[in-house]
Amino acid sequence: MALGRTLGNLWSPPAAAAPYASAIAQAEQKYGLPSNLLARQLDIESNHFDPQVIDGTVRSRTGAIGIGQFMPATAAERSLDPTDPWRSIDQAAADMRAMYDKFGSWAAALAAYNWGQGNVQRKGLAAAPAETREYIAAILGPLGLT
Image 1 (tube, one colour):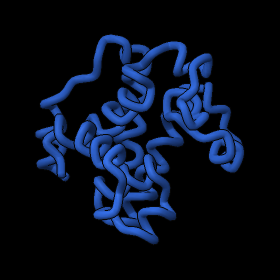
Image 2 (tube, one colour):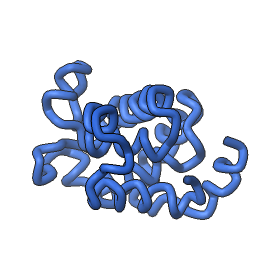
Image 3 (tube, one colour):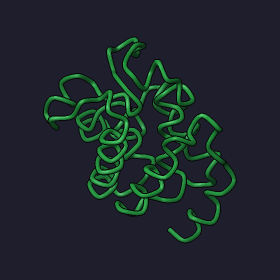
Image 4 (cartoon, one colour):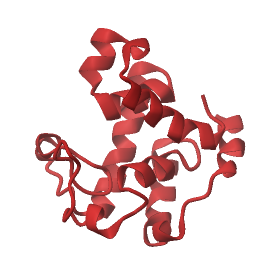
């Protein structure tokens, strides 16, 4: 992970992330995520920290809500208001740690976050759809992680 922490400095969060930077860094540290992994993931999930995505005004085509793009059912399972960016940041980090612990790689953890844990378990990372493979590359590539 030290290599990931060093190379993670290849990408920097956009200015729009500034209000959330401290919470993201704290969550990354709390859950042992590589530097900027969560920041980059939330950058993509929230369409570059678009306030209308973060506050739930704009939802994904599948109905996901907020900075972490939680599906309503997932948010309900976690008693999470997905439009609360502070709780969502912590929950997204906790989920990533749990998925990393379960699947053993950041690529598989990201696939599970994007495509669903069940899909990764049943079909494997190699069977991930193009959208999920692009999501993984868009997050890990700029961070120098694999």
